[in-house]
Image 1 (tube, rainbow, N blue to C red):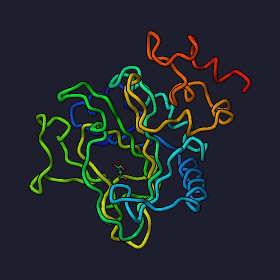
Image 2: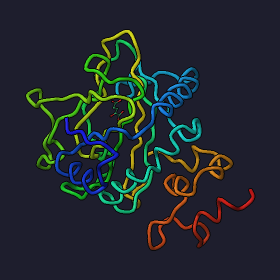
Image 3: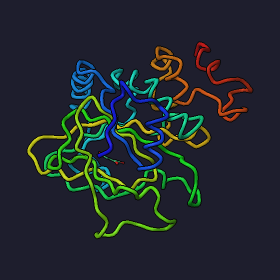
Image 4: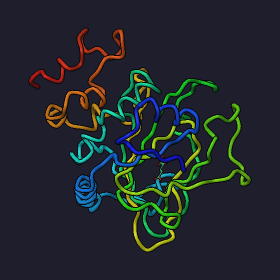
Length: 261
Ligand SMILES: O=C(O)CCC(=O)C(=O)O
């Protein structure tokens, strides 16, 4: 797998690899103590999180939606300067779209391969609309459900879909790293053939002019949002796509957020 260290890589390097290969693994994105804190806090959240309702979510898989309403342990990751630089280079003006904790339980089947950007009805080929980042909080192994993906599939000709002959790789990655992948890369969660769950968090970003996959304005209470760093508030949707998409009563949504109601 294409792997580069955060400490010696620039946003330009990472964005170039991402655009060329459809994915890139960046090591050293999260300190050990932050991984442990995130794992512990998500364990708390997961103790009250149901399993999935359909094969896509996974009947033995738990998904933590409304992530930024439930934990503070990904606030810094979401606004990490290197990550933000990559997103700006690839997506331009961008926002958080679908941040989700995903714990694939023992016995779970492989998720269907899909493209994250296929939810938007934009004809192919199109410029990058979505970039996802997967943050493993357990060791991802071939056996416990490491994310599956088809290298090169981000550049397939319009209309092509996976066949059993397409080579599938798995993101065998360690906590502390983050795998960046384009929304056009065919991928999916792996089957968990072990007796232990596999926990990871996706922080998915989308171009700023699209509708966010999750409606964070309703998912995260305003009292919570007011406590967050301003950049995270913007990424959750309290922002303008220039010149004025997203205004509130003719003003920047930051003003509505600050209003006492
Ligand atoms: O959990 C994973 O490895 C990937 C999950 C995924 O792609 C999704 O749920 O959209």
